[in-house]
Length: 213
Image 1 (tube, one colour):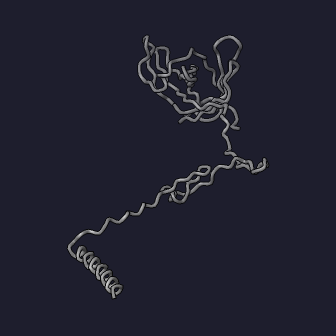
Image 2: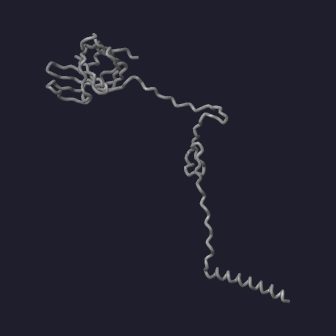
Image 3: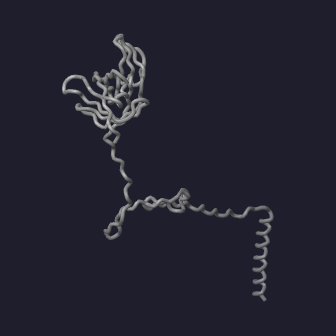
């Protein structure tokens, strides 16, 4: 009989505790806080420059990592072909201008070619484009300032005035004391020409047309 009383007393105690816990929940006592889940980590792993799929930037198109050209064991594999390199051209493409120069003695035409710092200048008795029909004698003048590429108006020292007759670009194929070879791309002066000194001394030159290559 004493043993049965102890068992009944224990069962009654457990039932009372359970009812007390339920009563707490009904009274609005908050349950213990739940442990928050850790957010998924974005894994950014680089292997030879390739982004892992877990990385946020993995939406971008993945590119193949450059190959070193060497396999395990020391054997070399085929490497990617290098892009074709453009070799610099020895020919120059520069500006030129033809100015109609009116002065007291009359009218002549100044052919000017840009050399970088100054303008190589030849004085022609008629428009340079007429050299396509027959050779044109001209006088090599001292180099002029580059401002004449765009200048029109009076010339200092009461030497008349200049007006633009032609302009454009030209390709310098050869530039030497023995002569020049140029291809002009102007409005009037078009084609390949040679400018050559008539003699080793003096300033007389000749402008003549060359066959197109």
